[in-house]
Length: 425
Image (cartoon, rainbow, N blue to C red):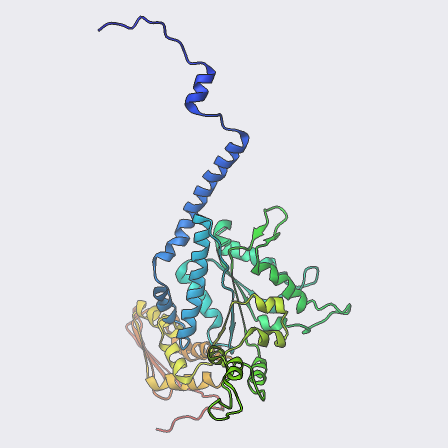
């Protein structure tokens, strides 16, 4: 094969420039580095956004296993949290942004408000920080500062700030921060209005400095949920619904066919079927009259009302999958200790809990007190044993000492509180 004897020359800089394109400028290098960092960030977030592969109903079903009597509210809260997660995913991957839903949960103590959100965070893997609003004071005053909740959220995300930015912040007992609750000597409302003004930063696209040595924390992608009892709020709703002639939010007392002096146009202006469906719900104006800034109430997208738990709900909580009772059943089983409880006892415990203002919280206290004899016996014995509560709640146990083979028995009679009547045999 003939060898090419023609002279060859190396391409000059201009030729190389034409072949490879223009050299990268400093701006190009920064943009490339930012893109690489963005791709790395998306890989970290993939675990979080993978939750969107499952339907909302799947997570709701897991939550309802331990949250009793609030099925419709659980569905609403799960849908809102997952919708916010989807909006964050659309922003991260496609640059499309939309408003997140912020929630206000209203209901009596012990009905499952906080437990619901905690359970949702657990099953979805979304980091969550809980802040008791009663401890909050405005910046510069003694007490808990609002920014501390950011640190708690980052800690819940195991130090991953990117995951924390897409987490849930839950302000409990927010009703304690209504306007004019507590004033200092200077006349400034450090526990009411001032706190509301600081909380407004978390609803919008802001950067909050939580540590002077670290970059500010953006609030754009957070899910904000608040809760409280809001005692007295129902009075504002009742007043709104009982006016002599209410424009909307109530069914008219006189229909056009009943009174010919009322023309159809007036009827259409005064009566809105959609408003009538909202009549039994709380609206932003109710929250404002209760003592919250209009700017604050206006940022609440959805108000969810939890109902008081019934006697049947209390029994269902006792027997639920994640209840204290079921946990001890499993623990005793591991030690070869059998526990038997008469069903009638559950009814007595439910009666005691439903009559208490703290609801399910009191039920947990009653359960621990009721199970004390069994817990003590199971702790002190290593051999096989049987523990039983009869229909009155009396406790009887039989254990075998594995070393001596000796049978040990114990009997603990039930002591009912004064407000309970012991069932007669």
